[in-house]
Image 1 (cartoon, helix red, strand yellow):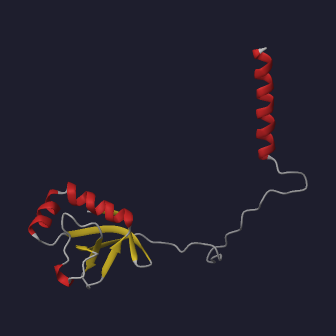
Image 2 (cartoon, helix red, strand yellow):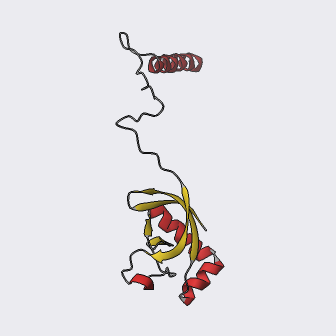
Image 3 (cartoon, one colour):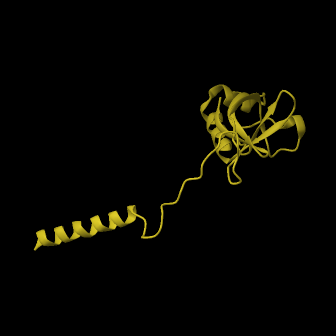
Length: 136
């Protein structure tokens, strides 16, 4: 009895698997769009290039100008580059900066004493946010 049910179950599963892999009669499998080099399709996402940026870690939610250095309780970070531009971090970047601030002794001491924290951030700019892949 158990052998008969096992054979029946295997047969049903095989049929379902075969049906899922073959298109219904009269239909052809969906063709993948051809990609031509040098041309973009309407639904293609723009290419985001990862770059490395150097600057001072700042509190992106602060509106006090130069008094906005990152502190131990900062939750929204940004990087102020040499030309004065502030790039705000994405959510993941904020978390990575918080983790680094907690785990990096040099950064913790600088944040506690109000000194600037020099950082090197790798990421890609998307709109007005810096999508952070690493921070040191």
